[in-house]
Amino acid sequence: MSATAALRMAILSNYTLDPLKDLLLREARGLDLEAEVWVAPFNTYAQEILDPSSALHRFDPDITILALAPGPLFGRLLAHFWELSPEARREEVSRTAGDIASLIEAAASRGRGVLLVHNFVIPSSPVLGLHDLRDPFGERAIVAAANEALAAACRKHASAFVMDIEALAGRCGKDAWTDPKMVFLARMEVTRPGLEALAAETMRFVRALAGRARKALVLDLDNTLWGGIIGEDGLAGIRLGDAAPGNAYVAFQRRILALQRRGVLLAIVSKNDPEDAIEAIENHPEMVLRPEHFAAMRINWRDKPDNLREIARELNLGLDAFVYWDDDPTERSRMRAMIPEVLTVEVPRDAALYERTLSRITDFDTLSLTDEDRARGRMMSEGRVRKEARAAFTTEEEFLRSLEIRATVSAPDAVTLPRFAQLTQRTNQFNLTTQRYTEADLQRRITSGRGMARGLRVEDRFGDEGWVGFALIERDGDTARVDTFLMSCRVLGRRVERAFLLSLLEELRTQGVKRVEASYHRTAKNSLCEGFWRDAGFSVTRESEERTDYRLDLTSGLAPMPEHVALIHAGRSSHG
Image (cartoon, rainbow, N blue to C red):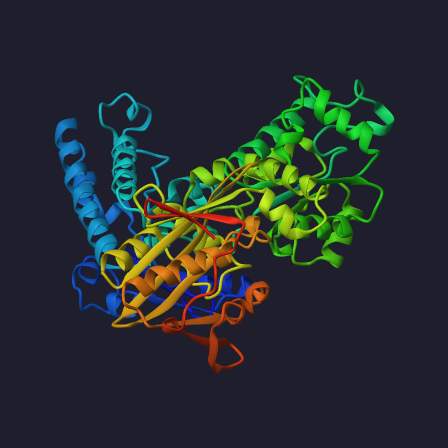
């Protein structure tokens, strides 16, 4: 999907789920997303998935929700529970789970976009009562086994994900999740509060697919990462350790570190004396977070919104990529008023609730976790050293040459494809068309023979930035069209995007391509790359408020490769 197209969602179910449609549309409006929701007729999920000419396939959804209740699926098993041996129950569960796995296989292979499969709510009052867990295959074991089978089936497909309805119902309260009267009257398995929670949970996937995931967590220090005020209490006086309340801050820091290891950038904005604060971060024995975990720090007495804006510029991120955490309600109010794009968390007064509150922030969710995510903290640390080195040079050209940049251009493989799909989902600032793809979508585009996909990896003398660029180009005879061209913000300023483009154009020319068509789709976030095609020598062919189309004649030659970039492509190396 692109930023200009409506997000299409389809709902397939064996129970009444029509009210979810309006809730999903409301949630999409809250994200400023245009959306369409189609609900399949009751209990037609199998036909819709298996028939290639069905209404589902004609609708061509970006997200397909497969919501099945266990009652209709395991009706025979539950009705004859007392008559069946544990072995017979296992066989029945295996057969039914196999049928659903076949539908998941069909949906993942025939459709596009993301498939969200609801798992089953484990009953809280099984028919065997206290004996249920002593039975070799009791009622709760039946549903748990079915849930594991669903998870295993989804793990086989990059585009299929389990929505953990069992956990969601547990958080809501299972008695509040289902109203037996509505089940009997209207086959409605989920109450209105449950539907509200279900819509919000679905948005976790929608945000990730639509490129709305947030990327950085900005933290205060005093009474946030530790109890007390470092400037008044001193290193030995702040509360941080095994005993309450210090253990709550340790638990909170561990949860923050888990986010950092998932690729979320961490930053500090604190009104403090920098020497005192840095001493605590570096030397307190109970600190979980250390200086190397933070991509940026602003520890001073300046206005916090100004500091956060400065961090956004330093990290090349939009303000809507940030989540802000501060125990001071006055500072939170000021941040909301001054920078409403930032998600400012309503922090509980009790530090014992910090970890739970952070765990329920879903805005950092992504559809995949790659090596680049796990290494992002190291990359940002190398980035700080790189910025410090810039001060030693009088011109930008001298600095760029000193970096010894090596740019590798490669076709996707099984290892890199998830990263390239993630780049389409997460990259906003330098993304010319903002097309969003899942791993399965890209795989289909590449294997169809219509698309040429290339990724860019960048290294320099300070470190390896990983795979930071991606392009998808479609050929039609001697004309090629650029579907996607994007670059991670962390390598901007090193002019590797020009080297990447020139390598692609040279490859197309050797394949007999004479003309290349490209476009720039305007969004609220990608003005940074508005002049890219023009600066690369492309001519405007059509212009509107939403987009500008370009064309380049390859027969007239190409610009020279940037001198500071060593290009490695398809096993051969060249230097501009």
